[in-house]
Length: 123
Image (cartoon, rainbow, N blue to C red; front, side, top):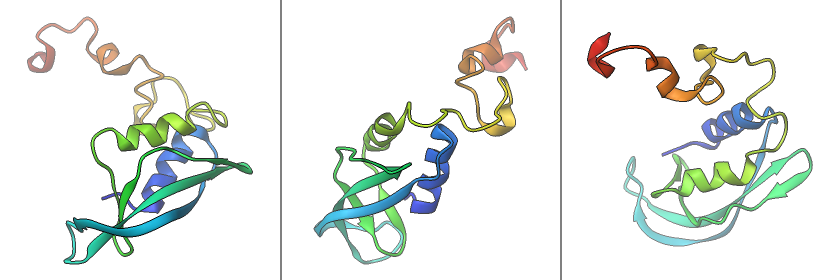
């Protein structure tokens, strides 16, 4: 489960823009929330970024109390839709600053292990 607040922080980290959200096309769903006994609804999410509305494709399951449920690659589809907006990668982020989660800009996980023998066991 992902709350809208957590999704907002992740999109802000990706774009440096504070997003707004609207859930639309809500209909009763089949899935039960993994955190409570209520049946979730299905919905589409609209993401507002600097006055533009992005409409990711996936139909999501949502619990009014606990947030959104993303199947398979649905979260990636939302991120793909907003990627490239704003400044990308957050404001003031330095390459290689792992405390802010910039593994992609620092060359990814493989860059962390470059030159180390033994992979995970080489620590």
